[in-house]
Amino acid sequence: MAIYSSRLRLALPEGRDLHLICDHLRACGFEIPDLDSVGLHPIDDPFGTGVNFDVFKLAQADVGTYVEHGISQLGIMSTDLLAESGARVWRPFTFSYGTYPIVLAAPRGINFDSLSTRPTIRLATSLPNLTRDVFAARGMAIEVVPVEDSTTACLLGLADGYVDRMVDPAALIQEGFRVIEVLGKARLKLLINHASYTARREAIDHFIGALREHQPPTPAPLSIPFDIDE
Image 1 (cartoon, rainbow, N blue to C red):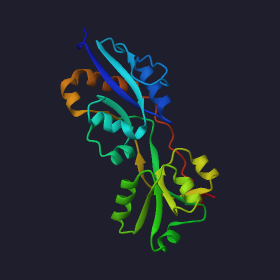
Image 2: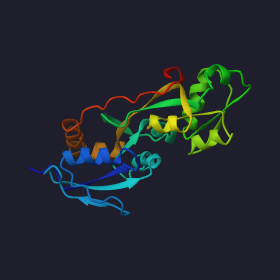
Image 3: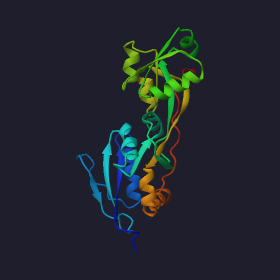
Image 4: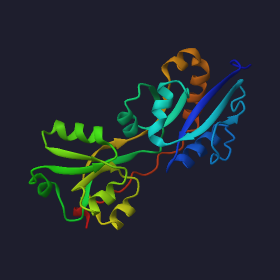
């Protein structure tokens, strides 16, 4: 018996984890179309409950804003970007994949002691709020350089190091960087608009249950390339 005739929008983040998300949704019964074209992509009643979905792709940092304002009832977003956006949403489900360390990294040979001797440490980051909060709690004077490409900022002398999500240790090593410290973890979460959940509780609970039932195994954690490992 159908829950009720309804449509739910689900915002998917562009980037590295999108193919894992789509595989997870396929295991739940979604027939995921080609997401390269712009706009909403209808998926008819993946659970046989009378609830249809519209999926669409967004820049990773924008998902929380769309869910908070009810443009999309559901979304998937990393916790580091969610904290930066300040979006007020419910996040009841954590995906087994999409977990990455948030690291303080610098060109090889620079360590925490050498950074600490500088009057002001300049850190490039796409996570300026998180970076300020971490170092303010330590009483350290830092200058935050908000950029999307933290690596280039360091290589060209704009910053002494960077704070960012580490998704590819091999690339970090190849670019001549090493991790000084792990500052935290970013995790992939399902976001839900508060008002939408109140109105469509049964349908959304069914979706969360399907995600839990078909949750893939947790992948091995990434190896952290510290200088001391060499």
